[in-house]
Length: 586
Ligand code: ADP
Image (cartoon, protein in one colour):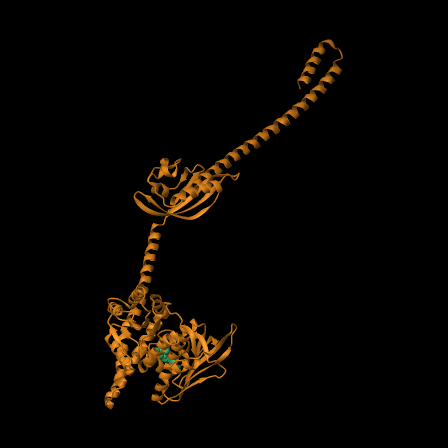
């Protein structure tokens, strides 16, 4: 434009020299129109620039507003985070890689008892001067920073302000955007009340276990204490029964014997049941003769059936071998329970005890099925499924009319299950019942059973026999049994007295009670064995005579140095048989 103005002024200068004004005028008009165009362009550019400026301005305003609101949002989020941290009742903290506190929440400050400014930038030991941890928390923190590991459920006992506190902590590493570990975040809470509760629970459990142990002990002691005098009653009544009595006296005596035997079977039920529920029951494995087992189980019930006018039969399938290895003690108890019920609940008809093979099982064992069938009162369908539960008797009238504890079938079920078998029943009300169980049994080759009662009695006549037993009635019964067979029996009233007698006399056989005052049978046996060893004296046979009939009791007697074991109440035949095995078949 300056150029155009310059040209215009040149042309005005030339006005004075040039005469051809018309041409000059034309040239000037041309220049003027060019100038007008240039001015339009400038104006256009100016307008555009002004427009751009307002766009930029509005953009700037918007950006600054956005920034402001983002900042406000961030501030309110930080504020919320702070409120959140401060409302968490646990101690929350962030530490840098030098393990110095950078952020802590309100609970942390309260726990430390310091001002926030005294915490930030400090280490654990600077903040908690009397902190006495028992765990390995500090080592774990270093591992979080070094290895980036996470630790959960770290528990330690710390002492803070002279108070012992259980603290539970979770620790995790914090990383920068580049993945570098820049610190850790920890959250800890006081679990003292939970720990106390746990300790109380543990204490309560220990007490309960102790209670169960004392209950077991109590039951064992009680069964011993009750069975011992009861043995006395039965033994004495048996002896009395062999004397000449008037008919009336005999009747009274039979009633007395029946009640005493019934009481004995109730006590045995309770004892067996308690052994079962406390897991104390140990199977009595051994070889047995099937026909003998069936005879022994049925012997008592045969007489009872006769008295009630019921037929009693036992049937053994001819396919079955005679000898088996198994838990004969349990088998006897189960058969006894089933037979006792069958006789009890049957008033006419018959009771049949039978055994037959079910089928051969894999490992050379036979599945043997025992059945007790009766034509008794039967059981209503609605009671069938709870009949094997403890203390279950079908209805009140049953309890009233028939004696029982409601334990027999529960014990039987447990025993059959211990023997890895199954038990069941079918019954029809008013018609009768069949109770059965199937167990795996290992067949055994027969072995000559040589029990010559006369021979052992003959031998025992030459023996010096000492009975160590505190119960006077038991002493008396045993004396009668031995003396009736021409043998002598000397007696000591407790372990100490027995030991003293033994030291001065050469006894061949000692019948030793276990539970006795002053010195018990186990200790007396140990002392006798020590004495024999020291003096080079001949080994005397010591046989335990005890009402504690569990396998664990037998083990204790063996460990103490006894040679044999006879469970009380013993029948003379069993006693002589055991002595036969110990002396002749040894
Ligand atoms: P109890 O000591 O009462 O006989 P059991 O556990 O042996 O306890 O038996 C539980 C109940 O089952 C009995 O009380 C009786 O009601 C019923 N029961 C058992 N066996 C027979 C049976 N052979 N006939 C009829 N009822 C039976």
